[in-house]
Length: 313
Image: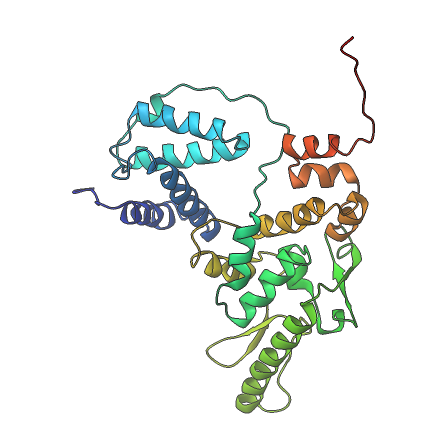
C-alpha cells in the first residue's frame, strides 16, 4: 500500500475505496463500513485521540470492549463495531483485533439503535433539501419504512392521514397513518417542489410528458421524470445519508423509525397504538423492534400502584 494515511478520515476512505473498487461491494455496504468505522474510532479517541487503524493495540481493543459493555450497548451493536474495527485494522496489516479473544453474552434485543431527544431535535433543525425534509419527516415523525415512503402516491395523501402500503404479499399490506402536526406543511412544501419538477419536464418535452403516480419523484439530466425505486430503495437511502453526513452522529432509516416508536413509548402511548402505526402484526414484534431495555422495564415497574407499609417493631 505504501505510506499509510495519517488521519482516520483518510484511512477510512482508503478502505471504502478498496471495498467498492476491488470487492465490487454495494453502496450500502461501503456506507455501512464508513459509518461503523467512524463510530468506533470516535469512541477510541476518547482514550487516545491519535489512534489510527495501524496503531491500535490489544490493550486498546480491551478498553473498547469494556467501554461498550459498561455503556450497555446492544450486543449486536458491539459485534458490528468490532467487525468494522477488525476489518480496517487488517486492511492496514494490524492483527490486534483479530488476536484479541472475547466472548459476548447472548442478547435477545435486535440490533436496535435510536436517537436521543437532543439528537432528534438537531436532525429536525438542520438545513435540508426539500426531498430530505420529506423523507426525514415521514420516517421520524410518522414511522414509515423507506419502501413505504417510496410507495406513496399522490392519491395516498388524504385529508389528515396517509394511505400507506406496507410490507407483505399481493403488493403490500395497507394501513392508515394519521398526520403528525407538521405533516401537512411538509407535504405542501414537497408538492410545490414536485410541481416544479413536472413543469421543468413539460417545458422540455411538452404537455404529454409521462408523470409517475408516485408522490416522490426525481428528474434526470434529460429532464425525464422517474419514481424512486421500491425494490432497491437506494434512492431513499442516499437522501437519508446526505443528511447524516451533516451531523455528528450516525443514523439510518431504521434508526428514525425506531426513534418514532420509542418516542411514543416514552410518552406513554399504548403499545397497541404504536404497533398499528408501525404496521406490525403483534405487540411482541413492536417490543423487539423498539429494543425496550432494562430501563424501560424499570420505568414500567414503577407504575405499579401497590406499596407495602413495614413496621420496624
